[in-house]
Image 1 (cartoon, helix red, strand yellow):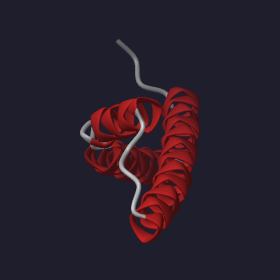
Image 2: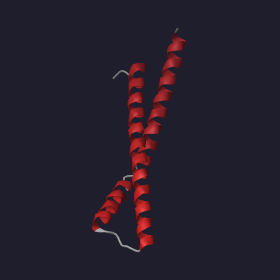
Image 3: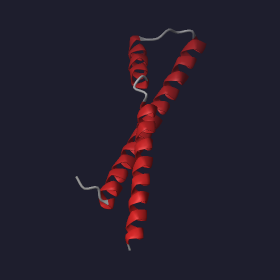
Image 4: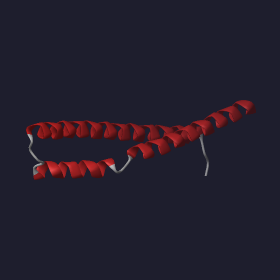
Length: 98
C-alpha cells in the first residue's frame, strides 16, 4: 500500500469535514438544550409540571448528550495531527532527495 502526499491530504480534508459536521451537530445540540432549559425554567416559574410531550423531548436530548461527540472529535483531531506529521516527514524526505 502506497502512501502518497495526495492521499494524506485527501484523508486530512475528509477528517476536517467530519470535524465540521460534528461541531455543527454539537452546536445544534447546545441550542436545543438551551431552548429546553428556558422552557423548563418558565414552567418552574409558572408552577406547572412537564407535559408528556416535553418529557419525551428531555429523554431524547439526554440520549443525544450521552453520545459524547467531543471524545470523537478529539480522536479525529489526533488523527489529523498525525497525518500532518506524516505529510511533513514525507515532504522533508522528498526535499532531501532533490
